[in-house]
Amino acid sequence: MPTLRAFLAPLGLLCFSSLLVACTTANEPTPAQAPVPSTPVAPAAEVAPTIPAELKEEFIQAQVKQGFTRAEVLAFLDKAKYNQGVIDAMTRPWEAKPWHVYYPIFLTEKRLDAGLAFWKKHEKTIAKAAAKYNVDPQIIVAIIGIETFYGQYTGNYPVIDALYTLGFHYPPRATFFRKEFGELMKLVKEEHLDIDTLKGSYAGAMGYGQFIPSSYRHYAVDFDGSGNRDLLQSPEDAIGSVANYFHEHGWQANAPVALPLANNSKAAPKAKVWAGEKLNYKVADILTPTLALADARDLDVSQKALLIELEQADHSEYWLGLNNFYVITRYNRSPLYSMAVYQFSQQLKEQHASKK
Ligand SMILES: [Ca+2]
Image 1 (cartoon, rainbow, N blue to C red):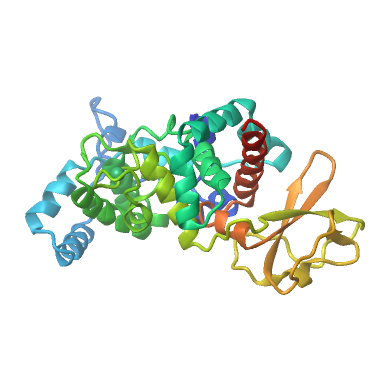
Image 2 (image 1 turned 60 degrees about the horizontal axis):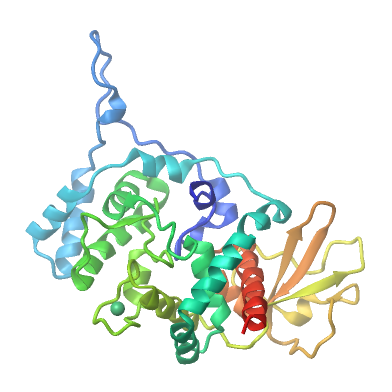
């Protein structure tokens, strides 16, 4: 699913929102040396760029402070290779897609069938995770389906190379990724992962739920009782870990996620459409006599909310996003991503209930 990965940001990479990705400019690393050759030589692109000595030393010192020996850090750095494909993937021009083009890519019969099969196969584990972490089971099933098609597309980049390349050769996000590179070193040690075979997305997200190293370390749980947290091979651990991630970000089971609005005005809504900021509005700030709930219901209008605009072929559709919707955006800040996850979760819930 490489074309889909291009606009699916991995977990925790919060600045990969649709807007920010669109703003990312190419920052091709300069080859270390580019002499003007009089005779043909190997292309400069084959020469991996070196990293500044002080940056390398700073990283070594930081890891030593975390309890590694200098030799261990140097050995880890030695294993990491520059990967031009990672930079290419990161800087690929990103095309904003309107909702009516976006959602059919994710909400397919094939994904729904796979999701229902996954739910059925892991029914007990999913129910246990939902109960323990107070999340709705369908949101767990939806996330794993949207992220990796139930573990089928978890990424083919060596994680160590991806994070090294971005951490040392991608200036716009180097600080962030260098930290993740350091977190990876700790993760590998703690969970006894095989760094030589560890694969993930071009941004270093791993396993069923695409956790980057810091998220893996912070939110992953051992949910199959094996004694370690394995998000790459254990669907049970992945289920528990996704549930825990939602729990820790404030998901409330059985609470509404997003509600469709009826727009009876040609004028722009009173509230600004949400674009990644904190939850600043209350429900009462968004609803107006001409932009009201499509289906009347009791709702605490003092609760935090955001306004979602979905571009249909010939009109804009508006939705009210509540706290749970905001929690989905903690996985990926794109409102379209979050709406696709929500609508997929609703499909799963309905179909799962009808097949019982
Ligand atoms: Ca486990």
